[in-house]
Amino acid sequence: PRVRFRRFGESSLEIELLCWIEMPALRGLVEHELNCAIYKEFQRRGILIPFPQRDVHLIPTGAAGMSQEAPGAEGEPAADSAESAAGSRAGWAPASAADPAAGGGGASR
Image 1 (tube, rainbow, N blue to C red):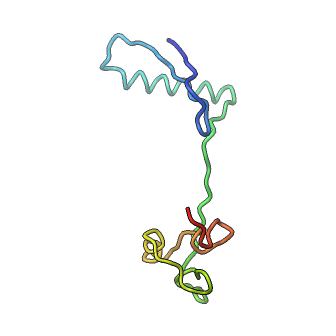
Image 2 (cartoon, helix red, strand yellow):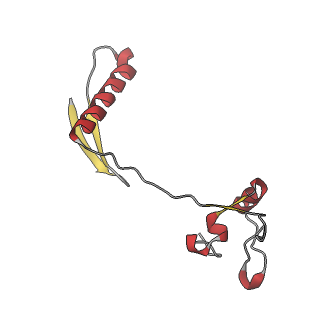
Image 3 (tube, rainbow, N blue to C red):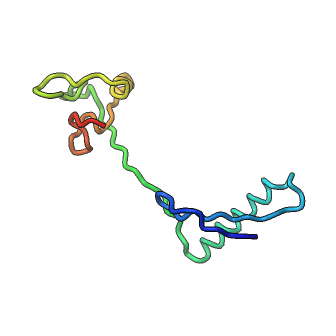
């Protein structure tokens, strides 16, 4: 087997394990067994695997005292977009559309 450090990922160090097997038909099973053995060894040694985490905030629309659309500039209704229209049909709007603290408030992407 050979181990190679390939690159820095967004939240990872990407390492490649190269190995050879006599029966290529068993590739899936051997890959599964290797991955499980590596994972168990990581657990035994206390090595954690990082992964990105994101918070999603859902804001109900149409509730008592809340308007269906977030106001745009100078009190005008916000411009329609596919994203906000889809959210309104489902009864929810993306947090960024209605919450300036979440990056909304008319900022362009």
